[in-house]
Amino acid sequence: MEKIYTAKEIKTLIESTVLGQDTAVTRLSLLFSMHLAWIRRGDKEHPSPSALIIGPTGCGKTHSIRTFAKILKLPFIVVDSTSLVPSGYKGRQVEEILYELIIEANSMIRSEKQSESTETKKNIFDWGDDEVENNAVEKAQNGIVFFDEFDKLANRPEEKDSSWRYAIQRSLLKIIEGSLICTSRGTNRGSGPIIDTSGVLFLAGGAFTGINDSAIRRLRTVELCRELTHSKQVDSVVSEDIINYGFMPELVARIPILINFDSLNESALLDILNNDNVSPLKVWKNHFESFGKKITFGPDFLSAIASRASKMGLGARGLQQVLFPYLTKHTYEFETSSDQELTLNGKHLTNQ
Image (spheres, rainbow, N blue to C red):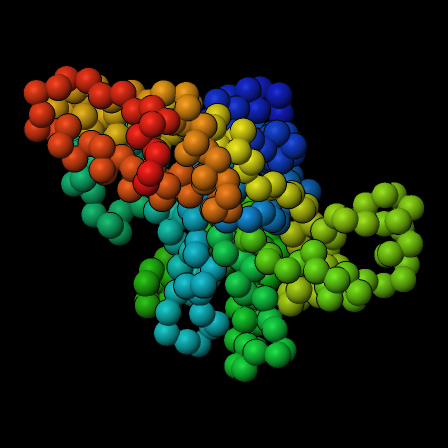
């Protein structure tokens, strides 16, 4: 049976690898605590709520969810929402997503068996793709599905041939509302196990560019504007904004929790560079260690990189983009030189 963690315990477990999003991480920690408690309780009528995670690219949405799932040992898959197609079309159907979740749960069970067995009778790589462990479906029914780029499914009337996005939303509605679904393996529809989705934690994330624009805000009802003004939440994104952005009210109603991720500022990016658990510099350090060499970075070098990445507005992903040209120039010869150690300082960034 899954261990129940309090929200504070969960936050403590992940705060060394998820940086710069304290409010969002606090809320996610509580959501995952509720989900673990639900797994123990098994009340199908009152599952933990699904959530929509809004934030700019590179702010850590996917990384955060992946970290939660890994630490809490829950089956987890990321779905690129732009890869989905409506029912009846060739492509990735929602039923395939659920089969992928079962396969992920299956892999976790096999790995656990492999690590627990002292005399392995069967290597995990010897299992056939069609062999599903007895409790794989049950484990998958407590798993997590994260729809990345979810905002790309918004139906925009001004765009030609955009109605197919509503068709995909309707397909998602079927699985998110909690149903018995016959999963599909690839193009072989309905060939997989049946899964009850009422206990799957569905999360969706996206940048939702422009959702704070006045064009969206003007569509709010008078009653909502009055309530948000009274509660001093005029600048908050609310469910009605998601609907006005191009999503079915029925689907939005089934993803009631809204969690905002902020842009990573210069200070947060510097924290990431200095944290070996998540720093992109770790790749470079490991690379040169394989040659018996050591590379270190001065504080002025790291500060300058964080500053430039912040100005690019690409979040944590921008760090590697900024780093690569400078590190390539100053480390290319280092691999084959007689030097055993290289320290990069702010001077290495001048006149670049």
